[in-house]
Length: 95
Image 1 (cartoon, rainbow, N blue to C red):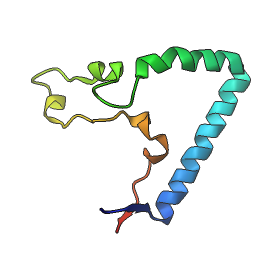
Image 2: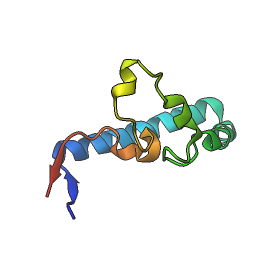
Image 3: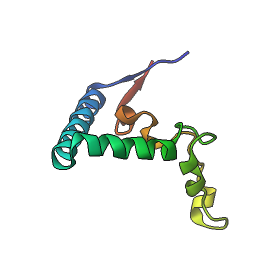
């Protein structure tokens, strides 16, 4: 089994991403209120569903039209927010 570890730039990007998410969440809660944000999240979670192609209703909207350029691109098996802390990491060391 191979393990993947973030390099220093990757760890820095991870920390920056987490900090940015926390700041955005704080600003939204201050602007709209904690109850409104909780209600919005609870309303949207069923739409997102599980982070897999088989269990998420969102994946149906990602199906590209046949004949278009996107039809030739491999489709993801999980959506971007299944592992949000990893979404911006591009500096990796495999070992």
